[in-house]
Amino acid sequence: MRHSIERILTTHVGSLPRPHDLLDMLKQRFDGSGVDEQLFAHMLNRAVEEMVAKQVEVGIDIVADGEMSKPGHAVYINERLVGFDPRPNAGLDFYEEEREAFPEFYLEYFNRAHLGAAIVPSVAMCCVGEISYVGHEALRVDLENLKSAIGKFGCTEAFMPCAAVTGVGFNEHYETEESYLFAVADALSEEYRAIIDAGLLLQVDDPFMPNIYMDRSLEEPERIAKVSLYVEAINHSLKGIPEEKIRFHTCYGINQGPRIHEPDLPRMINQVLAVNAGAYSFEAGNPRHEHEYHLWENVKLPEGKIIIPGVVTHSTSVVEHPDYVAERIVRFAERVGRENVIAGVDCGFSSQATYKTEVEPRIVWAKLGALCEGARIASEVLWP
Image (cartoon, rainbow, N blue to C red; front, side, top):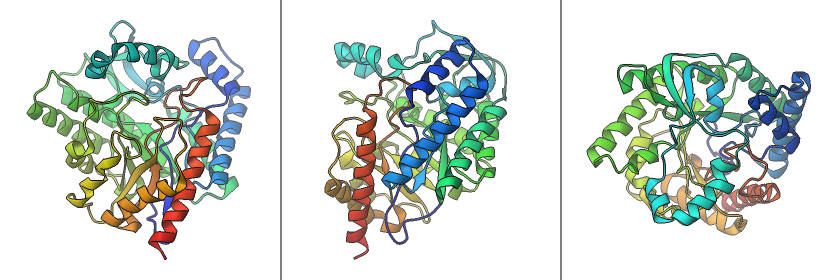
């Protein structure tokens, strides 16, 4: 993983809006309606190539496939692991305090956007048997499509995002929560290692850690103990992979909303840094978390590590001014060293595959353009 040696490098979190014709076929495949698999393979390859081409054109240094093949963050993992049964009536309980504080807003929001707008519903998955990984073919296609695209456009670095151990269902089979999490970790490690073996960077996506801090049923010592177990399981899944090949991304799950009950990063930072990764990606470009750059005045970034702060956000359609993006980058560079900062995005722009993303696709690309222009301006300041 490159550091920003001569200028500020740029990247994003992974997911990008999918083309509608690809969404049609994804929906049919996951509905069980059946599709022309040869045509689907062609459309998927074309979509990945177009996404990489757009990233290169706008100036992104470390690119991804946009998660073109995936119906949604964590949802895709249901087809790659066995040992689970769907439980449609189990419910997906999250953001409890947020929903109680603003019930009218979140009722409407979750119906029209977020999980409610996804082409594949998010259903609770219950572990009912031994877990194993069976996603080898789907992963092979993803890897080949991305490697083909980056080869065509001469990209130096690319990453592939994957769900963290903590985002995979709930347990009714293993004797303890620890044994369950480590079984998931062993299964997912197959996907992780294959990504590294393909010459790509691995990004582990974990919006679930903050949910523990929002769990009102737990006292603070219980929260810390549970998060520590999660981190231990994540590190188990990364065993044997060089840290410098790993990016760890955490966020808060909700895209647009009041978001007043989210934990701040200073509360979680020790646990985040305990993950054995070479770079840490987090939200820093929205009004709830932008001020948290001050934490790096008191927290020392471990030697050799990189931070990837969000300097543009997915939580609004306002396109950030490049000068302000540059200011955000410089704040972090002044605190952790310019070489240890890569400019990023708060979260993905289409974490669920949907026909209507919360930020319209043309605005997404305008934001990524502002990100790259802001990084150029910041580089002029930091390397005068």
